[in-house]
Image (tube, rainbow, N blue to C red; front, side, top):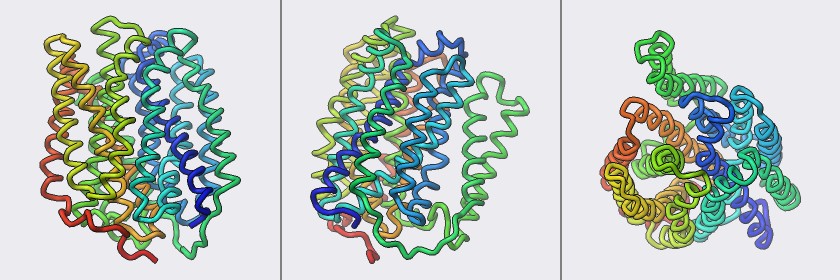
Length: 456
């Protein structure tokens, strides 16, 4: 462990704060997206790329950052990630056209890719199995306090000042978190002598990027357009080759063998589904309120508060439940709630009844922490300490891939159907399918596992 008992609580607060900034950025940008699109003259698909290029970069590099952190240490890499994220946020705020904003958002994603998995790794190494669920619950609660403020802050800044301030507030938190990490964290001794899996990284980036490009551009230029069709075929093939290579690599970027554990697989699917649903709710829910109902950014942000306030309240409860009861029942309850919530939102949009939409938002908010916290705990408990970076990278890659594919699929569904309700019906169906799989996959005895197997 790299900290004493007092320092670890300061570090937990710092990691929650930086997670919160990333979540704030995610939800606030979603509310501001219609305004950004109008001011910079972006097409609908190009505007969606403002969100998705950030998520795509995160999804491609989070696993690599977790692996590099296992090899070279957390302190230096996390500090570098904080610097890149903060600097790119400043540049994004000054962007004068769509291309400049997209480039800055991509670089911002590079920094966030280091922050995301390493913050989870730092907490996993600072707290033992008996307290890890509690720590993750607090980590999630701090983060979701920022998330709760995201729609309101994004709407208020966009209406009162400018959407650019959404990015300019990031460096302040980044500097404070960097100071805490540099002063209090010391990497534990490492005896890992492994080569970095560059081939795996290239295949993952290549496969995900082409697949997401094809899914998002298909509705705009046509599914049979050569660029789109080729991107989809080559992207899927690259991902298939990636899985094949990783199963045979001695030091893989992603330990694919871990997915032989059904609980591990289900936990990652649950995390990905939660992030998919978040994108549908905060980006496309806000878009519906502004473009269909005619609400301004501030009122749209306020309307989304029922979707995030319950998340803040439920996060500590989810951590306590996961320590006491394991992953199965809290995660399954979360999947039931989110399926009901998404279905209610879709129904409310079909009948243009805001009361039903708001009730759906509340169900969604109650579900998110029950999906994230127990599943993250299950993943970190399933690997030895020297693989915590790998596990953190995998679970966060699953989360980010869920968000990236969610943004791409939701954009495609909206473009094809011209119906926001269809976006939520598909999200509800996916949640139902994951619920069915997880019911049979999650180990019913998992609640008794308080330490990761093979801890050294």
